Amino acid sequence: MLRFLCLMGMMALSIATRSQSSGNSPALIPLPAHYAAGSGQLTLRNPVLISAEGAAVPIAAQLSARLQAATGYSSEFVPEKGSTANTQISFRLNARKDTALAAEGYRLTVNEKGILIQANTAAGLFYGCQTLLQLLPPQIESKTIQNGISWIIPYASVTDRPRFGYRGLMLDVARHFFTKQQVKDFIDNMVKYKYNRLHLHLTDDQGWRIEIKSLPRLVEVGAYRPQRTGRWGEFTKPDSTEAKDYGGYYTQEDIKEIIRYAQDRFVTILPEIDIPGHSMALIAAYPELVCTPGYYQVNAGNRFMIWPGGGHFYGLEDNNLCPANEKVYEVLDKIFTEVAALFPYEYIHMGGDETYKGFWEKSDAIKALMVKEKLKNMDEVQSYFVKRVARIIASKGKKMIGWDEILQGGIAPGAAVMSWQGEKGGIEAAKLKHPVVMSPSTYTYVDLYQGDPLAEPPTYSMLRLKKSYAFNPVPAGVDSAYILGGQANLWSERLHTVRHAEYMLWPRGWAVAESVWSMPAQKDWKDFVTRTEAHFARSGFAGTNYSRSMYDPIVTVKKIADSTLQVSLATEVDNLQIHYSFDEFYPDQFYPVYSEPLVFPKGASSLKIVTYRGEQKMGREINLPLTELWKRVK
Image (cartoon, rainbow, N blue to C red):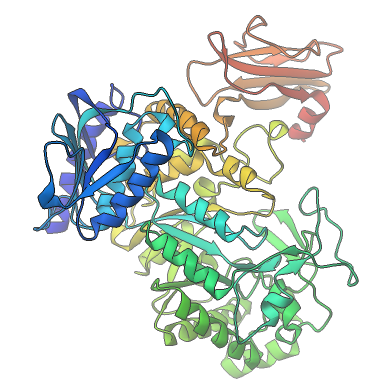
């Protein structure tokens, strides 16, 4: 009953916020449960007098550093009891728990008396700070002093709490290595939008990124590969004589430092050791762990798996650990012993995805294992492996989570499931009463195309911003008690740089952030677009890259005769005009406006398009060659 009453209260707050969000309220992402605008505004003064005690002091210090970087204002700290009329910002941990806020909620009040942030926990105070910073002008995001700015904050009353306790982002550091500082910068960007779980994909075919002291070859061999530039999947296979000079890894001291940095920002790190598939880097270091004898190297981005479509795939090389080899479990015991000792989080992710079983089928050792353990098929072989890994992880005092393939052949007792192949795996796991993190590729894979492929860096599928914003971590008919939350995944096969990674993540990362923090009744696509545009400005001052692909037209082609194409254009953002040309010159606002499907005139070889909002150019100039459009029909 208590849970029901709390839920009803949150729904009421959500509905109230939705009615206000499209008005004059600030551009907050994610939307708070309740926002009430006041009449007036407060101007920060130099120095900024801040009142904080106990657990609030480190949070106040972080806020002070953010303020000083952009404003140049210094801060003076006083204990709560020393607060005076000159105190501008006050932090207050509730002596008696405020049931409306739960563990991570907060109240933020801005009025003529100053700024007051109240919460039950330090985490709540921290999230209140993130909202406060979003109430300030966008220049507050700058890392250098911005002169001539009035640092004003509108009067407001905010009451807020998250929908889910698990609000995650996955960063793949295995395919391309990101330095310790780059991981810290990633954490700084994610907490601005109230994410609290960083899933580190630490191992894969292309690299092993964590030091395991009892198995030194994992980083000596597994952390490095030959350098390649160009299109992923089309690289040449490494030569055994090539220099292995690309990559890197985190020492255990690096990991401890990253964990401390994350904890100071109320982020919990989920480590992933991806097995039994995706293990080429591990096998390169210890080739005796594979069922198929041979010479193995860390993959350099060359193709060794084939994906014909429909979710099917097959391997050209064996990249799986051998479930029939007892030494595999001895090695994994050493790995998980050290991983468990490093990471405080209760869960360890064991991967479990995309295991090609064709090489297992040919293995005499696997055939003998199946007879011994009475395993009927390859799914049960995989389940045998997963359950043994689950017992290893449990022996370290941890719980296991894996991608939804760990359901195949029977799920391990107590395992949690991260559902990536759509929502099906999460629904199945929840019905089996297992904890679930929803991370469906159909909504949360932010490494996919977000605009027309002819204007985007190459990848393999499409996920537009509007679709990401439609993400609801609780599928219809599922008991929400088993849904821990949701997560966006940033796979890095094709992401060579931080700038590219940021381009793929934002603004889709904002869309997912709102889906895991705010209640569904609050969400409104048009309002989100308006707020996203405001956060483009904030990102500009922060020096964070982002994509404006939401302004680019959606192109649909169909054949209407043997040699004739018809092109339809649409936009996911309202109030845009699409201008087009067939004359080989890029159009501007003086060119024709699209109003109905277009047919290529005789002799035309390309269609060029761009979007405007009135006189302002919004999208990119996109060239659509006729030859490329014909490929889409086929």
